[in-house]
Amino acid sequence: MTLLLAATAAYFSDYVKSFFGALLPVDEAEEASGRAPVEVRDVHYLNLNSAYFLSRPPSEEDIAGWDRKAGPPSAEWLERQGEVPLDVARWEVTLEGRRTSEVVVTDMRPKLVAPCEPPLDGSLVETPAQGAGDKFRFGVAVDRPNPVMMTIGGGTAPFPYFEQKTIRLPKGEKNVVTVEATTSGPHCRWTIEVDYIADGKRGQMSVTAPGGKPFEVTGHLDPARYSSVFLAALRKCPQPYRRVSGAEYAEIQAGTKPECG
Image 1 (tube, rainbow, N blue to C red):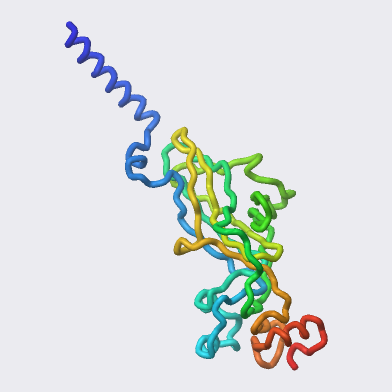
Image 2: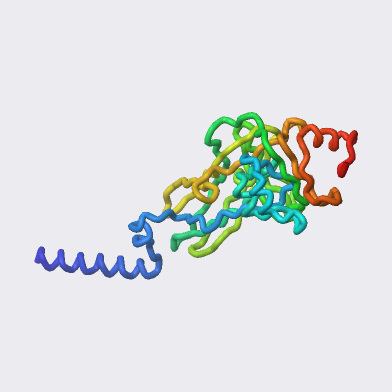
């Protein structure tokens, strides 16, 4: 009788698990894989800045490889020179839910990898200014204490998004988050920390720029301190993207020297 009852109980237990498992599928395979409940599908830089700092001043060979008559330098050329966005860095981060049950992102915030430092000095490239439009995005001042993601654009007044809302990620659904990180002057490097709830548990993950590098932005220097500056084509000089010294750039900015003289 005892053996019969035990066998019956085991059968009934398996039946209940099978029945409710069909109604409420679990992510045992996903959990066993060790893959995070939230996957970073893409991290993409938006080239919308009016100027870029070059951490590796371009050589004559580098300059010869840029057809200045054709327009501004390509993203690949800027990357080879170690570009750092000036004043604002704009990134798109694509997140995807990887659980059968919905994953809820409860917070996103920048985390400095080291204290911010004085702005970088070196070469500068002016580029045609482009607006970011009125698309919904997050703005954050990374050089302030305890920076918070604020909503900007989208026709709404700015507010601290994650104090009032969350981002919900059903399985397979992608959500593109646009982040505009600004600095009032210092050079800052950071990652984006993401808090989430999945399978009833809290978790955290870190988002970096491509290659596992930190995100980066630097503020302006006094114009005279730049070693060289490539003037944007919008200045309409006969020589496109004319190269000037920092001292000349300061005079041009002050209006005491002609742009194309």
